[in-house]
Image (tube, rainbow, N blue to C red; front, side, top):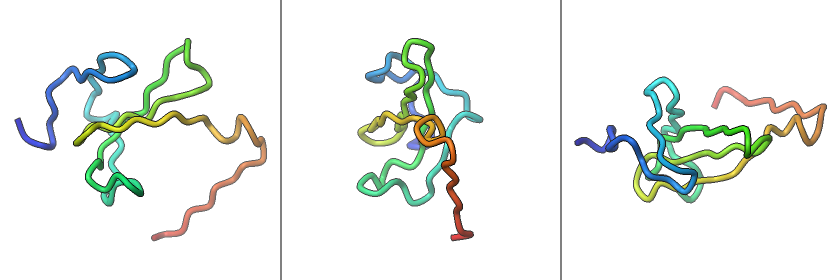
Amino acid sequence: MSAASPALPLETRFGPIAPAPEDVIAFPDGLPGFARCRRFVLLSAADMAPIQGLQGLDGLRPSFLGIDPRLVQSDYDARLGDT
């Protein structure tokens, strides 16, 4: 098994998951404080709505809770530069 292909299904605090390759979100430089974890999957479940889980697939497999910011601030508009 390579580092790019963790054993599936993965046991997580959200329960077992087996993400499809097209559901994996890649952060080439990792997230601040989690540089070694570069692949994540967004988890949604009706009993968690509107909260979602961002589950890391590498290393210690960190997980985060998140919410669509437009549900909190309707005029939210994130503008990202090319970098």
